[in-house]
Image 1 (cartoon, rainbow, N blue to C red):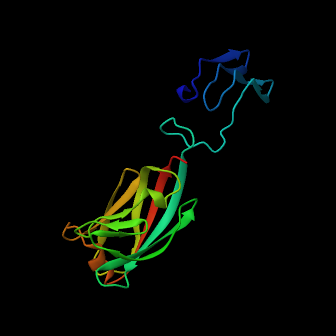
Image 2: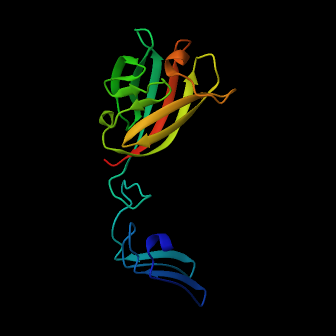
Image 3: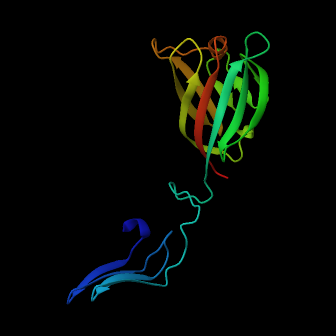
Length: 194
């Protein structure tokens, strides 16, 4: 009941009739009064002065306007030596970045950057609608490479940074080396501020 900011709730039991009275509901549910009672075998719910809607609000940190998004990132071997090619596609309400080829180690192309060691692949904030405020889940969906991989992720200054590891050794893997032997599909679930 505290989720609704309830100021007053009571249950009445009078001669076989049960009544629940919730007065002063606030917040997402809004409203003033809701009651439910049973009388002579008839169920009845009364709601007086309830305001507001559940709508499409995503609550968590109390800030309105958050948007849940899901995209798939495909990382493959680039056309030029020591590069990768990336494509971001929307799976549900997500963002799309067209095929971007020849992303070099220690360099950028379009919205993608590889660090000087080639182990961090970053998608720039400019590639997303709204600022990423939370990367909720980033999972390797399918990898046709030679290693069993796991993934680390974070968001820094609204950029999304990804790093893959060899599951058997725990060592980070150079993106370009790994996609020389196959493709990597990554499922990304994230929250933006717009």
